[in-house]
Length: 64
Image (cartoon, rainbow, N blue to C red; front, side):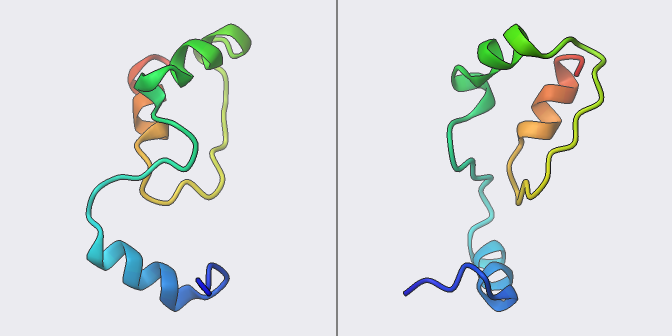
């Protein structure tokens, strides 16, 4: 069983897998249009537990 609650699991995962990963969907794959419906550019957003996702970076690039 995968040990998501263990720090060692995540340290190992990010050392081995250098590609960014999004659990749900990529921002540019459609999530951007959904977010734009509900969040105004310039809003303060806290992305908790983002791992190595590019979501925050891509949202910032779009003015959020």
